[in-house]
Image (cartoon, rainbow, N blue to C red; front, top):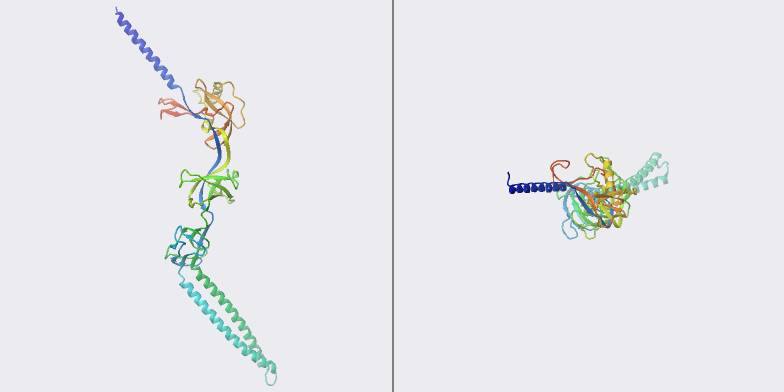
Length: 431
């Protein structure tokens, strides 16, 4: 027969085992309960924009080339007296470079000599004209007679006409020689490259001693920006968005050179010569902006936001909350999941509003409850929503976190894995 104390001890141990088992089961059930990721509804300004990428470009760029061929012998001086180089500020008429002019100077000398020769020929022709003119006058006085035969009479007349023609030929040759001289002088002048306008040198494409060859296309020597205080951003806009862009539209943009700083401008022109790249049609939009401080440099990459709509003091919900819906239970279809979610709410869902969507909140029992909402514009992150049940600061469900057991639907991975419903995969908010 067992001792009573031993019986009591065995009963106590059994009771403790049962209690431990109950606590373990309760903890296990709690671990299986879903944890929801939530976000707060906020009220504030909502800006609807179109994003694009562009390049900062000078408003007016002049490509200074050479019209003659030759070797670069020297560069000119800029406004500070330094040799013309990248970033040099130059005035209109400033000498940028000089090309070897020895051949062109020889052409000028040759043209001048030819002109002198033609002028001398003209003088000789005029002297011959004077002599033949006197002979012709005497022949006309005598006329064909016993003193002057008919053949001599005709010879004097012909010599006079020939002298007149020779004077005209020499006068024409002088004009031709003068044109040749002007052309040679102009080519000689082209050996000195000057700035056509006041501006700044963006690019110098030749070095001293380099030979430039002018053929059908003038070789480019310098790239000159007329005014960097007014600068443009050239943006490639997709054909799907170009209809929303118009001249005068406000624009903001950022550049990587100045992180955290926003620049402002406005649409100036929409170019009609569209470009097609891999079957994608884009239009170039010119954005004018002020650069009086000179901070924006040419050819920086700009991240542009075209401002389409500005809403003030609107209630905003994260787009993730509009996409979320409760997941289907095991063996339950998507339709059943939606119906089950409605039943978990307070009564049947109201009639679908225009541009409608749905948000889910947690009720008193920490269960998802559906709220039908009217959605408005979206900035890509948040969407304007309206509903009598929504309040600023309300927590809405954006995702679902389940403990990672290493098995089952979640599989391996991090201790908490977001679970999104299979239902509303697309954003219900207006884009």
